[in-house]
Image (cartoon, rainbow, N blue to C red):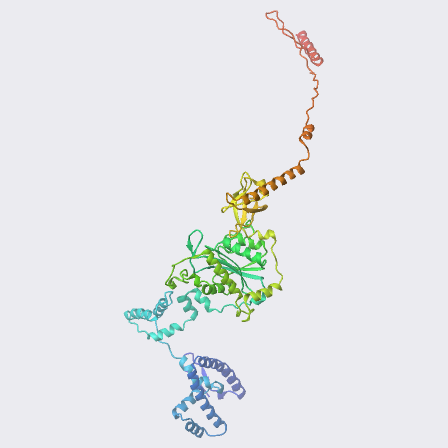
Length: 594
């Protein structure tokens, strides 16, 4: 019933039968529930790690034992039930009783994982590897250069042999290396960008918008050599704006490089054609985050944000700017369009020989054999973007595999409230040429080889002015401002004409005569007095002379030479005479006292 406990600590051990029945039941329930829960969790965890073939073998054994237990529950004796099951199943007697031992003291609900042997397999000891050798192997294998594991194992095995250490096999250590967290292996060998791709991309529902409510923008360098008007050959860069709801490319500009001016002009084309969007998603590149576009936005994470800096174009128009991650197609869907253009437009037959390939290792055989003139390049790109927008069967959520970007945009645009830009707002995105000095004689301006003039410029002859213009439409009127920012006028382009062009000379003469006639009429309206009337108003008159009288008179006395000459005595006034008398009397009194 009880005995002294062997080992350190001493004490006594009691058998379960030494306790009353109710206490025995409580102890059994308490110990069984805690132990059984832990054992059950381990059994099923190990079972889940097994492959399908091991699970299938365990299920077959499980069915045999369930049949044996069913015979026992029906009243059959254990020996007869075991003999019948062994004969019918075809397993050996030794295997049958070995399986019975596996489920001894195991709840019937846990027989299946217990028969699978996962616990035994999980309990096996790993081959011992010294910590310094294991750390050395991990540091060698988990490098950005991605060495082969065989090379790493060979190096560390040579070092272990020198120290007299026996290592497990290469396959064993490779399995142990593969058991490290996959994110650790990917980060160490493939880098941050590859690790980022392991995390599921966010799915953004663009159907919450309507047409022109939100747009996104990015730059794209074409894989095509283009010959520019100045004779240089370079790959052009396109800046575009895309509608997020429909996926339609709304506007774009092409230049030699991605710059702030191209972004401003492309955005101006968007507003001019369709209206002002509510939101714009941009990456934090230097050209998109410049103060001329996004100045005044507190969360602009490029350049210094100063309180005194002027508002950029987008804040002035009330556009909410959201910064997107560069090279992230989930946050800027326009990058998906660039990938389409790289296949459907950049490989156009007209660009054969000018196509560069999308990387240095994919150069075509006829690399740089020709360059496409800029005019031809722009014509093909324009047609390609139009086809891209009009192509039916788009698989986006709003197109549903049937309609095109143009169709869904037009449908939503017609039913949406769109903000249009005023004439003053439309001048904001034009490029500014500062310090353009007006001609001192007629006030005309010269810009990029063109001459511009308006009558209002006469008041600003010789002054330094600011001119806003579109570099791709230089024959359109330009807008002229003072240096302080005040708007002056819109100046038309004055084209140069042929030296013997009589019709142009006549038109110029008529325009000049009209200008002079208008000036004369304005002068007549402003100057109402004739020269005679003006002379009469300013006729001279004789001034009246005022007689002045002196209060002090000095009489004239002739001067004489010699001792007998007497000096001219000054004529004293009444007050001076009285004072002189008092002084003489005082002198006499002083002498008499003496």
